[in-house]
Length: 473
View: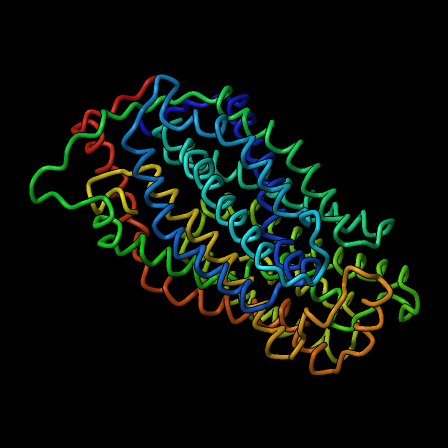
C-alpha cells in the first residue's frame, strides 16, 4: 500500500500554487518587519525585542493548541481544508495593517497608542497565520499514506512557496529604484502581496482531496499520555526542534539585507553623494544579498530530494551546516577586507544552503506541523533579536535616525564608524555561520536512519490499520 501513488499531478500543482500564495504573504513579515519597525516607525529596540520574544512565548501555547484542535475535529468539508478559506481575508488585512503607519503618527512617535497598535496587530497576525499554516502544511499527511509521495508534495510546495518569498523580497528592492520613501515601498509590498497571495492560498481548500480519514478523537483513557506529553517524550522530534531553533541564521540573509544595505558601508560603483544615488545603492546591495539567499535555497530545494535517495537526511544536513559555516567565515574575511561584495557572491550562496509517529504509537498530523510552525516563527524571532541586538551593540539608536527621509539617511550612513559598519556586515556573514554550526550539533544524536527508519515505516502501516485509519483512492 505504501508504494501506491494517490495524488495526481494536477493536485500536487494546486497545492504548490497555494504554497506560492502563502509564501508571498509570509515573506512580508519574515524579511521586512524588523526594518519597518526599526527604520520606518522607529520603535525602541527593547520594545521590538520584547514583542518578538513574548509573542513566541504565546506561540509556544498557541501553536500546539491549534494543532490539537485540528487533530481532534473533522468538519463536513474535511479536517484541514476549511482553515485556509476562513483565515485568508483576516491574514490579508492584518498584513496590510502591519506595514502601514497609522494616520496621525509620524516617524519616531513615542505615543503609547502606537506601541499598543503595533503589538496588537503583530500578535493577532501570528495567531491567525498559525490557524491557517498548521492545517495547510498538515494537508500532505491526509492526502496520501505513501511517505515518499508525501515528502515530494511537501518538497514541491516548499520550493514553489520559496518562489513566492523571492517575489516578495524583490518587490521593495525594485520599487526602491524609483521610490526612495521606505514607508511607501512597504505599503505597496503589503497590499499587492496580500491581494495576490491569499486568493492563491485558498486554492488548497478546493483542489486537494483528503484521502486519509481518521476516526474522531475519543476521550483519553486513564493512564494514557496526553498529546503534549507525547511530544516532549519523543527524543527524535525534540532533537529536530532544537536543531531547527538553532538554525535561525538561515533567515538572516533575507531579514538583515535592508539593514546591511543601509549601514554596512558597501557600495556598488562610486560612493553615493545624493539621496537618489544612496537609495539606488541600497537596492543594489539588497538585491545581491537576496539573490544569493534565493539561489542557495532554491538550489537546495531542487537537488536535496535527489540527494535524499542516495544519502541519509542527517548526513546531508550536517555537511551543509558545516559547509555553510565555512562559507560564512570566508564571506566575512573576503568581503570586509576587499570591500567588494561581488566577490562574496559564491560564498553567500553556499551559506544559504543549509519521528514522532512511530515512537509514541500516535500520529498527530497537525500537532507535528504546529511544532514546525513554532520552530519557523521562533527562528524568525531569534533572527530579529540578533539584528536588534547588533543595533544596541554598535550603538545605533533608531530614535536618532530618520531613515525614512532619503537625505537624512545618506548623512547618517556617511557618519557611521568602521566598527558600526563591521557589526552590521556580520549579520549576513559570521552570525549566520555560527548559527549553522550550532544547528549541526543536535543532528549527531538523531538516530532515525538506515534500517531503523525502514523498520519504523513498516510498523507504521500496521499501526494505522489497528487504529482504524481509513485510506481512500
